[in-house]
Length: 157
Image 1: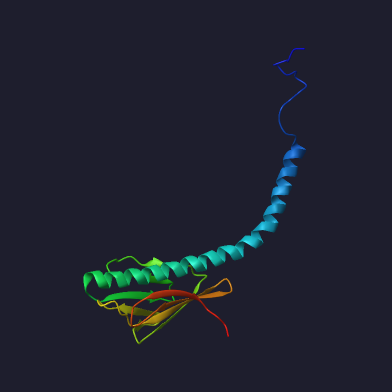
Image 2: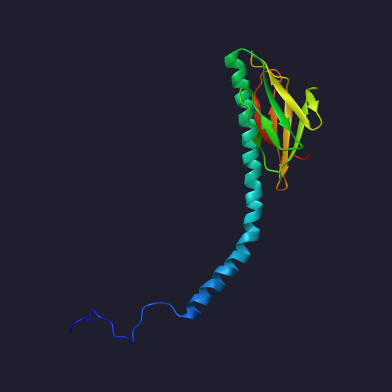
């Protein structure tokens, strides 16, 4: 028995048009089912990411105040969805799908913009940044006495 290494012209390798169309139809059906289920997950990840970004920026601002021995100011613009940290001219954007609120002790600079102040001893003016999206609410609290930054989920009573 010998194996023929050259296929005869009647045995073509490849896919038929029907097979290719069938694969495309199956892929389209999977996309139709998967996309609506993925969108809430993306919105949830945007909320988590924005929350971590804000908390990190607040911690960075506190660290700058401690290490430099001078006041550090975290600035948040809730209308235009950006924040600034001391020592950098750059503004950092937040997703527009995430609704922002800032509660702080009278450090409002203009409409929709305010700040949380960190002092050289580690304390702060205190405040809370509330982030809402994907049907969830995240809180980033700044303790006025210690300057500690804590992320919490809002608990509805």
